Image 1 (spheres, rainbow, N blue to C red):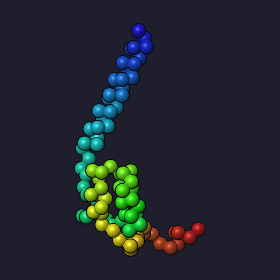
Image 2 (cartoon, rainbow, N blue to C red):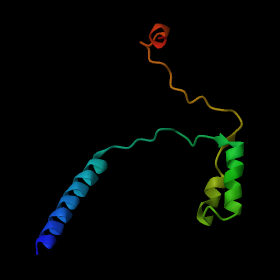
Image 3 (cartoon, rainbow, N blue to C red):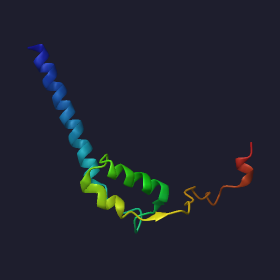
Length: 92
C-alpha cells in the first residue's frame, strides 16, 4: 500500500515536471538561423551518398542528401571578437 502511494506521488511529480517543461518549449518563438541551406564539403557529401548507397541512411532521405549544396571552400565559423575585446586582455 505504501509503495503504491509513493509510486503515485512520483508519477504525479513526473507529470508536473513534464507539463511545465512542455509549456516552456511551446512558448519559445523559433526563427530560422539561415536564409538558405549551408553548403557541406564535397568529401562529406561523398561520404553521405556512400551511406545512402549502402542503405545505412533510409531511402526516404536519399533525395534530400543528394540535393545538398556542396563546396570545396572552407567556411570560417570562428566567432568575431567583441568590439570591446583588445589584444591586451588576451595576453596573460
